[in-house]
Structure formats: C-alpha cells, structure tokens
Length: 65
Image (tube, rainbow, N blue to C red; front, top):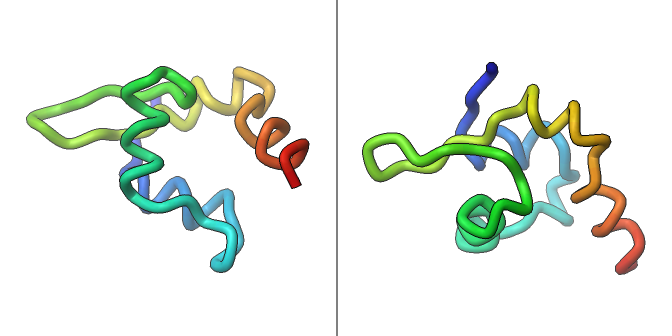
C-alpha cells in the first residue's frame, strides 16, 4: 500500500490546469470514488488500490470533457 496526500496524487495524475481542488479530492475520498483512508484527520490516497481499479476516475473525467 502506498499512501500519498491528495495534493501529491493530483500533481502526479492531473495536469496543472485540470487538477481538482482540495475540497473535491476530499469529497471523492469520503465518497469512495478514489480509494484512501483518513489518518488523524487527514486524508490519504491509496495509490496502489487506485491503480488496481483500472483508473475508473480518470475514465469518468475524460468522458465528461
């Protein structure tokens, strides 16, 4: 399991102009749209679980454009 901050995850997988806001990232995490966990009040994305999911979130974002 590789946990990373939502900001790190967004910087890795989204271009500067298309990165979701921090509020959106936290909502996606709390809604289960991206896998992660809350540790001590802070959210972290589980990058390994997200990659294993087949990048559904990326596919949905691309379909909306």
